[in-house]
Picture (cartoon, rainbow, N blue to C red):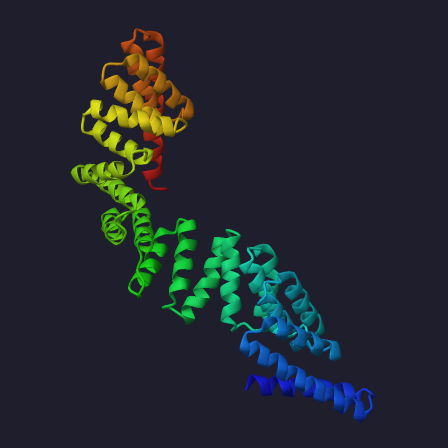
Length: 385
């Protein structure tokens, strides 16, 4: 059917040329040559012989340089050989000949998207959609390009239209979930991932992403269940296992968290995130000596993070090393001067080493920050008149 349609299009185009004044005998021979060229090119396409198809389409456009669809087909043959620049040139020629033809614009945008040239892809894809608003493939490519440009809100709008017509498309659901997660729209991401996970092809990554979305939506108990499923599907992944341990820690399930995090460190001793979380867990349970080496490991890996330096400072203070505690807590306060507890713990450590004046200043700074935070929270809760 496609071959008959293209032959008819070619015939119509050439009849118009003949009407412009060429002689009938010459035109008849040219039409026959073009029909043969179309047939040979399509035969090579069916056989997957793209170099031969390229030669035949090149011959066709030489005979009929105003045949936009032949230029489109030439571009396809070139694209199949990864000759992107030449293919783009052919499609642009087709778009110039027939600006109302959606195909060239779509092919340009799709292939630029595949090449990661997202900004260049937007205009031709939007043009293709303006000519054919129902073109799902063009809208999918546009959503992908927008996502690649981190224009997540616009990508979500395009994806919503696609999902309205294909609500069980797994690739669309996954892309929509990624877009929502990037926007921190966790509830919507969780809803989309739930729809995806009832379809075939569940993976540990999908369950972990579902867990992240649930946790972001403040549904942490459900997030832990999702991560349990992720670990069951991929038990060798320390990343998934750490995520589960972290969620147990957030839920105050300290025994479960300790078991999971210890297993992470057994498998990957250099995992500084797991070391910090387990060390902080021990610190919370009052076992500063077990916490200390783990927190030292975390602070070496992340020396510019408030949490690691603050927790290590507290551990030194609780194990009777106030001088080392002062050094770590000063570092923590320099990283973030706006946290009241940092100044409070530093003040306590300074008092222990006899630096009373500086210690009192730090304690007063902690009080001021604490009071300001309480006032801001009270103002936030107070109803507006």
